[in-house]
Length: 275
Ligand code: URA
Image (cartoon, rainbow, N blue to C red; front, side, top):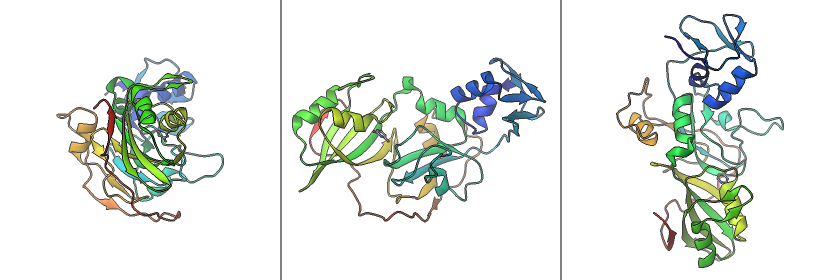
C-alpha cells in the first residue's frame, strides 16, 4: 500500500514524523535508489526499497510500547557524543529499535515511554492533546504557600508564561520538602525552570505519571510493556486496534547506579491550582 514517506519512516521507529520530514527535505532518503526530497512523496514499504542515510529501512509489523523507570544519569537521546549511558542501554532484550516519547533530563528519573510507533508518539506529544504529566520534586528547605500558588498560576519564563499547573505539597521533611507538579506543556526543563522562578532549589525530580498511566511499582532501571488498553487510553483512542500486542511482563535490568530508598509516589496534602 502506498503511504507517505514521512509516515513510513516514523512508523519504522527511526524518529518522529516531523524529524522524518526533515530527513526527506535534507536529501537523506532514497526510494529504489533515487533521492526523494519532496514531502508529499509516497512509497510502498512492502515493495519499494527505502533507505535513510544509505541504510535500508526495516518496517516492523510489531509495535512496541514500553514504560521504563528511568534512573538518573541516563540520557534520552539515541546517541551521545560524550559517551554517557543511554536509556536504550536499559532495554537490552527488546527486539526492535524504539525511541523515547519526549525527553527527560539526564538527572531526571521516573516514567519514560518508548515506542517504535511514530504515529502514537506524535499523538502523545502533540500540544493540542494537552496530556498531563505529573512530577515529584524534592526541594531544598521549606516550601511556602505563595511559591506553590505562583507555580500553580503560571510563572514567567524566558519562553513565555507557563500554563496553570496543579501544585501540591506532598511531604515535609527536616531538610527537604516534596512537592508534586502536574503540567501539560512539554517545554525544555520546564519543572526545573518553574522551581527556579520561585526560588526553589531542585534536589531530585521524578516523573510519576503520564496522562492515565502511573509509574507504579517499577524499580529504577526496570521496564514493562504496556497493555493494549493502556496504549489506547493514553492516546485517547479507546476503540483503536493495536497491530501487535506483546504480553504483559516485567523485565529486570541491572542498573549500575546505587538505589536509594523508596520515595512518595502519590500526591496529597495541600492543593493549589486547578484539577
Ligand atoms: N521538567 C524538567 O525540568 N525536566 C524534565 O526532565 C522533565 C520535566
